[in-house]
Length: 150
Image 1: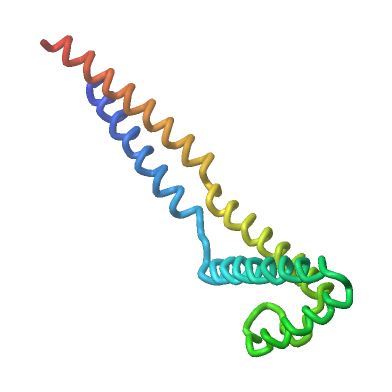
Image 2: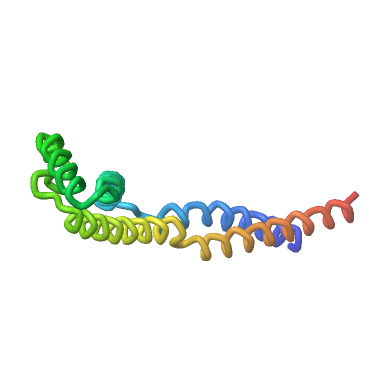
């Protein structure tokens, strides 16, 4: 009877270890919409970071030269209206505000991604370690009964 109990404890331990991996997979969902939002936020942040740095570089010149350089840069980028801000209406203030908004959206998306990655991790770890302990106890019990039978 005790030999069967050790076998049962071993099987239960292995089932808990396997279940811990299934638990983790079923409790972490990242939707395609969230992925698209994260990707868009990261792309916008990168583009606006480039525009912001470019604008700051142009503003480091004298004020008159800076306004002229920014206007010329906006005209040269006017064909590229696919970015997060329309180059024809871009001003240093609008670029800075758009960058701050993009940074906020990216940080929120990144926090959501990190939450999904760690969601269920605690419960899965508990199941995994409990399963390892039960499997070890079951193996020890089987080993004891084998040594007694021999």
